[in-house]
Amino acid sequence: MNIEEYIEDLKRKIESAYTVSRTARKLGKDPCGDVEALPAGDLATRVEGLVGPKGISKKIKEFGRENIPRIIDYIIGDSESISDLSKSEKESKIEQALRTSLAIITEGVVAAPIEGISKVSIEQNPDGSEYLSIYFAGPIRSAGGTAQGLCVVIGDYIRRKFNLQEYRPTRDEVERYVEEIRIYNDRVSRLQYLPSEDDIREIVNNTVICVDGEPTERIEVSIHRDLERV
Image (cartoon, rainbow, N blue to C red; front, side):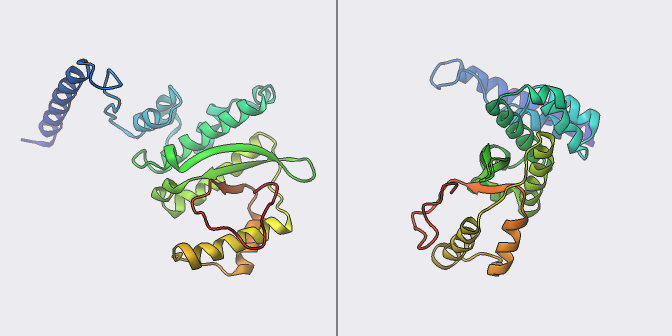
């Protein structure tokens, strides 16, 4: 059996398995009447099936997986259409662009694009300017450190398209990051790499996206609490 025959044999067996699964689902013993997980033959198809939007697989093949900026521009639309969107519509577009980009980077094989981003929101700095906040969750770890960092970089690209300003943390918010990271390392789990307090301050002050997330531990901070934006 050569490689082509082997692949065709696999396809026949997969289709046979799906036929059995669809027949079983039609018995009505499951909440869903059809098989949810559909086969995907390539990266573009996996990305569309995983996070969407509908029709994006064709554009990924057209632009190339390495041309994420063009793919993002296709998802969010031109500047004129962006200006007509409401706040919630803008957030929805940004979230879709982020999830699709992350799915491309991680090749559509991990949970990070679905469960690693809880939500995105457009918030206000103390001076009234708007900035982008990305809420990450535990499964983002499956993406790996490089993809996690790229997600923030991509967020910066997107927020510029929406004419959003950079995140401007207050002094107390910067110190909250320092305190939380120290507490997590000392009382929850040792970090693989623990930046110095000055490095943490440098990172927070120069990250134009607000890196946020839902609470995962019940340990309270001792000093920098009751902050309006935290």
